[in-house]
Image (tube, rainbow, N blue to C red; front, top):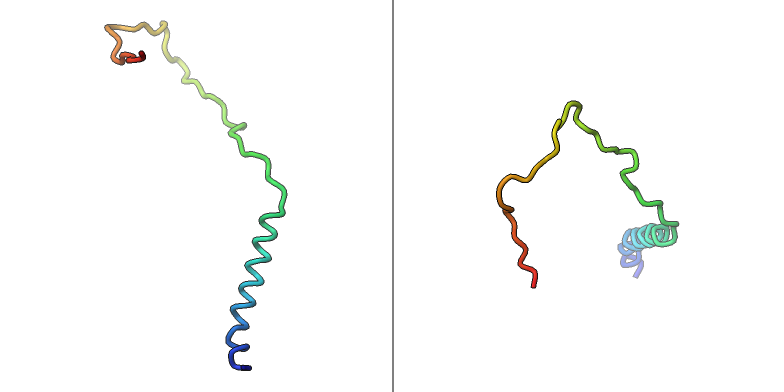
Length: 65
C-alpha cells in the first residue's frame, strides 16, 4: 500500500498543479481587446493623379433573385 501511494504521489502533485493553473485561468479578469489602433493607412506619395474610371463591361454579375 505504501508503494502504491509513493507511485501515485507525482501524479497527484501534477494534478494539483494543473488544477491550480486552470483555476487561475478561469478566475482572472478578461484582458482588453487588442485592436490595431496604432496602425494607420499609409498612402503612396504621388499616387493616382486622375480619378479611376471603369473601362469596359463589368466582370462580375450579380445573380440576385
